[in-house]
Length: 227
Image (cartoon, rainbow, N blue to C red; front, top):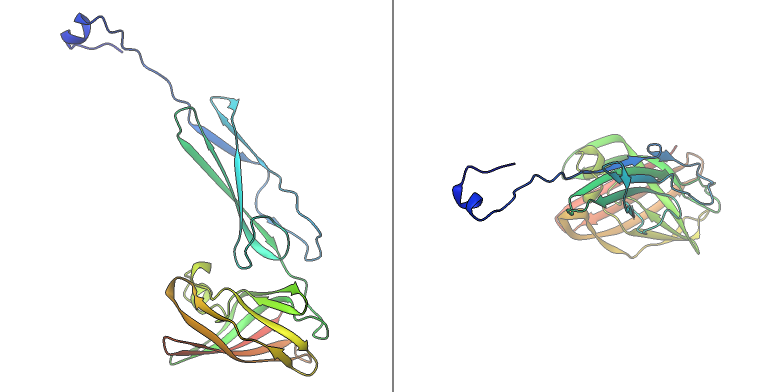
């Protein structure tokens, strides 16, 4: 590249073009669905390059509902890959890893994958939302992926950022419908305070019924049906 600016020529500056090779990330395989009884996960990985030369790759894992920065149990995980070329220009790529919970027997476990039917008061009713996941956290504690049954995440399509994440119940005696629940959580990006007021199961129909009350004036009556 040359310049018609005489001041540049007078200074004897030799202006040359430089080539920047943009970073490229190539995934090994696509999204992954594991068996519910998987015991571990090995990521297929990815390759980052710039101008045909391999460059450093950074990998980050984030669990959607139950936290964690490794794929270590039932959840939907977002795996992100990033790389930077010599000019610090970034590239990113993503993979989803779904580790479904195995369906419990309603004797020792209520874990599993469910669909949701619910009524929001005031409001209206809806059916066949999901999936709603219940994960066995150990010691009789079960975590629910969305304590309002997918109302905003699935019915409105707002995604998991608007799910009521973090609600747990402790199964003291499943057959006797003896559960403890005292969490107070928010509803995703909306916030507020959500409390569970009832929780029961029906082993014959593999269903769970619970009610949660939100400080913004809404009551959610949810029925989960195991898939």
